[in-house]
Structure formats: C-alpha cells, structure tokens
Amino acid sequence: MTARTYNNKVTLLPSEDDSLIRKTELIISAVLRGGVLLSVAVILGGLIYLYALKFTGNLHNSTYPDTLRDLFSGLTKGDPLSIIVLGLMILLATPVARVAVSIAAFAIEEDRTYVVITSLVLVILIFSIFGVGDWLGQPGPTAIKDNTLGFFVVVFLSSLFAGLIGALVGLGGGVFIVPILTLGFHVPFTLAIGASIVSVIATSSGAAAAYVKDRMTNLRVGMFLEIATTLGAICGALLSTFLNARVLFVVFGLVLLVSALPLLMRLGEELPEGVKNHRWAEKLRLPSTYPDRRTHADVPYHVAHIKSGFSMMYVAGLMSGLLGIGSGTFKVLAMDTAMRLPMKVSTTTSNFMIGVTAAASAGIFFQRGDIDPVIAAPVALGVLFGATAGAKLLTRMSNVRIRMVFVPVIALVALNMLARGFGWF
Image 1 (cartoon, rainbow, N blue to C red):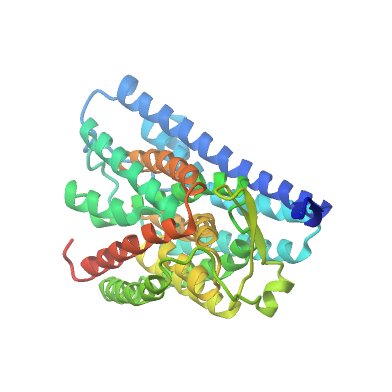
Image 2: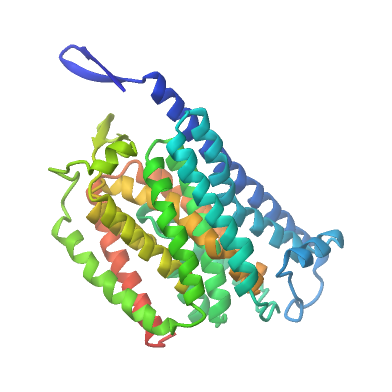
C-alpha cells in the first residue's frame, strides 16, 4: 500500500502489488463459491429425485456408494443416493480445488515462495486422500439409518445453527452436530463423525468464500500453516489405528480448558498491543491489514512467534486426523494467543484452513462408508446456509464481541471432548 496525506489524514492507496493480491483473493473466493453452489445444486437435485420422484419405499435397507467405482456405477444407473453422494464429493473436493487454483493465483503474483508452499500443501493432500485414504479406508456398514422428513428438518435446522456459530468463531460445527446425531437420533458414532467432517468442510467453504472476498482472511498465514495442519492430519489418521481415541478426547479437552485461560485474561482486548513481527514473518510477507467496517478503516497488524504457531498447528492437524474434528478451536488459539493476530483475522483464517485439514482425512471417512448421504446432506445444506449468514454477521462485530462468543464455545468444545472421552455419549 502507498500512503497519501489529505486534510491531515493518512489514506492508504492500492499499489500494483496490492492489485495482484486482490486478484488472487477474488480468484480463490470464486473457486470456493463455485464449489459450494455446484455442490448445493447437485445435493438438492438428488434429494428432489429421491423424495419427490424416485423414492416409494423404506430406505433403511438401501445402500450408498463408498468408493469412486461404486459412485460411478450408481450414477450411470440414475441412483438418487449416488447423486447426493456426488454433491457431497464436490463439496469435499472444493478445498483441494482451492489449493490447486491458489498455485496459479500466486504464480500470477510472481510469488515463487508461495507457489512452492502451496504446491507442497497440494502434494500432501493428494497423498493423504489417495495414499493414506486407500490404505486406511476399509469399507464399513453402508445401510441408511434414517430417512424421515422430521429427521431431515431437525438436522438441517441444527446444522444451520452450527454453521452460524462455526463461521463466527472459526469452528467446523461438529461440536454441535455429533451430540445431536448421537443423542437425539441414536446415529452410530462413526456416521456422526463422517457428518462432522462434512460440516467442517461446508463451514470452511461457505464462510471462507465471503471472508476472502472481504479481505478478512490472511491467505499467506493460512497457506503457510496448512503445511503443518495437513502433515499433522496424516499422522493423526495413521495413529488412529493404534491409539485409544477416548484417552485422546480427554487430553484434548483438558488442553483446551487450560488454553482458554489466556483468552479470559484478554477478554476485553480489541487489538493486540506491543506485537513485533517475527523475523520469518517479514520474509514470508505475513503482516497485513484487514478492513474494519465499524471504523471504516484498514487495520494493520503484525505476526509474532511463527515457530510456536506452526507447532500448535501441527498438533491441531494431529487431533483432526485422530478424532475426526476440524480442530478450529486450537487453530484460533494458536493464531490469537501465540501469533497474536487480531481475533477477526484468527477466526476467518481458521475457517479458511479447517476445510483443507478436514479434506486431508475426508477420503478415509468416505471409503470407510462413514458418510451416509441421508445424514450428511441436511448437515451440508444447513451448515452452508448458516456459515454464509455467520460470515456476514462477523464483519459487523468487534474483536471483543467475537472473543466473548468464542470463550464459552471453546468451553463447550472442551466439555464435549471430555464427555466423549469418558463415554457419556
């Protein structure tokens, strides 16, 4: 940005470099928005075909595709469940497409550093989906569990709320989806986790499309930290076959509760003060600005403690792969507490990242048969609409308000983790 003084006020003017960055943001936002709209259209088409035109009996004995070969076979036969699964697959593929397109976008900027960084993230993602996913994705039971209209409506409305809160505080919504499905509808835990993965990617894709367009997200921070989260997700998926998940839930819940203490101490903080850029932050061009609609000004910020933030992101990815969650709470904590980003930037960048982290393990859940389309479809639609509404609401909120929402939510997430660990549901 270049500065010009007018009537004793400093006004920031876009430079040629800023114009290229803006093009990158618009390209990435368009990819996310396009993936969301296409997936919604296909899911809705499959649901209409299923309930209004095709379905005449009980779905409880029906099966749905859990491999790409079965999906293609079902599509050629006009199977409505396969159409819904295709829509879900488009949604799950959207974060991967976003990473791929980002390589070209950074190439347009002639930013070789981030072409390399983003290419590395894409390689890790592809390896996770087609390498680790094929190895660990052993098919499980694929029978439809529920198909009533009441089930669809309640799950949709619950997911709408989950997407709204998730977009505001950088979570994936699974903290609400899993208890509702397991306790309210007695859905098997594995299928609830599969729906949780869908909700994470839906929240990320739906909210990030708006956040990137509105320049709320720090793309470079997100891309750089995605190296750690995707590597962590792969390691977590590998470890999930050996470790007791209940113990991990308890440990993660306790860590979250302890980590929330610094947030309580800074509950009234609007912007971080006295933050100095880490030496890597300058080299990686991480410091930036975000537009504050409340003050109608661009707010500059610095980025500190890169090593600590990167390490915490690896742990967040590890937990995501182990437990089937987006780990958005831990990502926000890493950026807010360690790297000292403004709360708005932390939550929006977390939303940007959680979809990629979840995509790193989504292939495993799909090939295990854990993504039931009749469960995942209302989750995806509800979360997408809720996340879009939440993204619009966040731009009008202060950092203090967002922090006040985030603190009780993180406590709820921690208690949720502890409840799972102790086997209460």
